[in-house]
Length: 371
Image 1 (cartoon, rainbow, N blue to C red):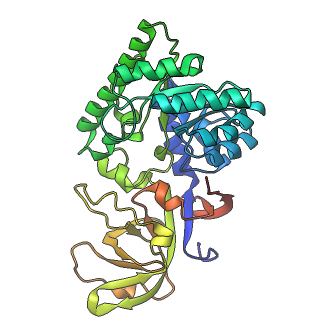
Image 2 (image 1 turned 180 degrees about the vertical axis):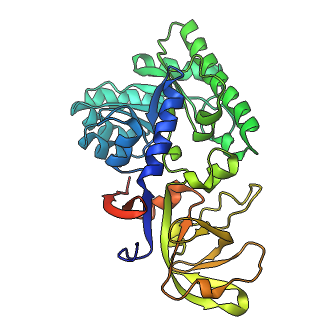
């Protein structure tokens, strides 16, 4: 069935992708807020269109290369969700002059001043969201802080709103903890927006986002948009959080068995970290999935087999408990599939998706890289 695909290769189950996208659209739109899919994992127009169920729409990107690619494919409303620095403003300005509405994020007075100065030089107005630190995970200003107001003053009429990323949701044990993070996420952004409005700053956009909190949040009251991305594909980290099941994971890496080390209980495959990535996102979860769960050619998990170690082009498959492996099940040249820890990191290793429908490869979709 998959014999015509050279390995290692990135497989994409179109039906699982469609189902994941439909579920998130229904979840978010039913709450009366805008879904702004994050396309940093997809890096492909067909996937983005499936996420929106439309030829184009509002999206989130992590690189200006993504912004340029998706603009060229008809997308006009783009949030560049990495802190802007002055030397990147001309690329944003170029897209703006071509007809895009690219918004950016800042979390300091210095960054805000740089944006305003470079925008004026380019002769365009680039709207900006102030990033809020809702959980101590990464960047951002403290909610309702003086720094928030100082950044807003520096932005002036460039201010569009506030945003946050609830990255701490990835550290939770399950849905209950994620709901608590989601509540903090919402409170931090909504209270910050209210604080800005109380000082006569227009703040129309209140943007939150992570796949776990988008899935389990009890309320989006006061929020205007939700940004989420990995839900399209799902992965083992999301499964470990209770966000999805293994059967919801839409991507896998097809690999060939290239050798046996029977005395060690190892099956060798041709998917190493260059194909799977070095991501070990499940290491701190209740179940450590190594470098990925090993499945048969149809995508069904094979008992307790995982990729336990990786070299650049070699993966070592063994039982999680170190027990015996039935090597007759894995003749040289046979195919296995590996479910990824982190869809973003694994997909980034590949230049195309081999799209499956009813388990059969029907077409390839190009991916791109770069910044």
